[in-house]
Image (tube, rainbow, N blue to C red):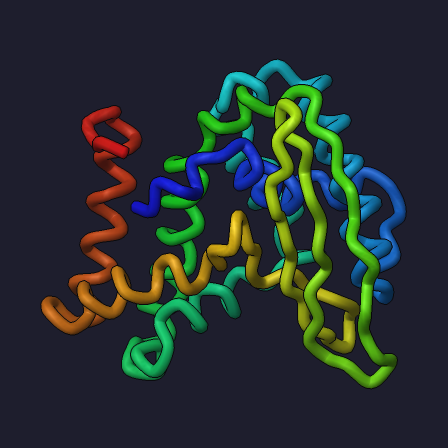
Length: 210
């Protein structure tokens, strides 16, 4: 796994998926949606001891209950797999999406305990009304150090959806593309699914190294 994602900021993305519906969010405005939800996330983490402790069950419940309204993790997984996505059966696609989501939750759940007094500054949002794919850029002040955190969203009939994040210049999708490609090249789509499943089992038992 890419160690540069071992930041409390990644937890912000996963909790973002879980806290979004705490109040009305304008999903028709990408920057307003990100700003509203991010503040909700910071507030929720600070008030929820289970999230602060990195409780995997608690985080999983939040993601499973709230991830669909404001994110498209299937799109994320499809882009990570590239053309290999179409070689997978619908059932394999479904299982890979779920295992990849669980992998990210288990890998980075401990980072939540580091989220405390971060503040977020947003860069000017530049997009045309006809744009269907945009980036909302922000800088998180983490113990006095600025950390780049950007969100990539695309427009759907139901509103904007997050499908990628950028931490310190590294996009999540790009970070996993090579690893997924190598697994499929060596072991096929079923091999990738086996790898993700085994990795989750290792993380669940505490036997996996970071």
